[in-house]
Length: 103
Image 1: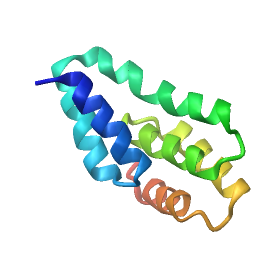
Image 2: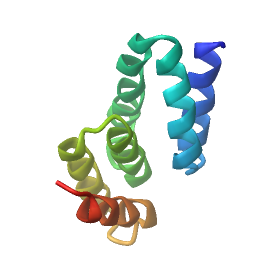
Image 3: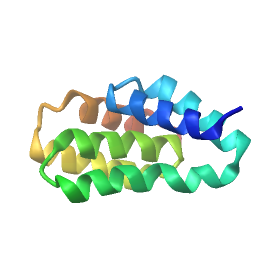
Image 4: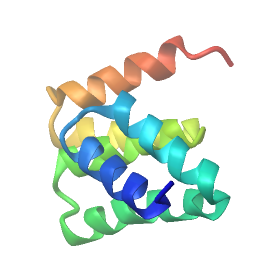
């Protein structure tokens, strides 16, 4: 029942590319305290501020945006990742998810 532990675990899982388990951890954190939802995206936005040329940082932001239901922002993040590295597998995966997402 430690929401901070779930948040940290979620961040670690995102950084290792295990997005499904990360989403579960973030859901647990927000189930304990709904305000935790407001702490997830800023972490990845700050990583991009530190290293704006890192396609993986943009891909991670894209997946986090998908997790919180912000498809528009996710699409932008994946597009940015692909503009930095057109072969970025996570960004390509994210774009496929968005394309197959019911509108």
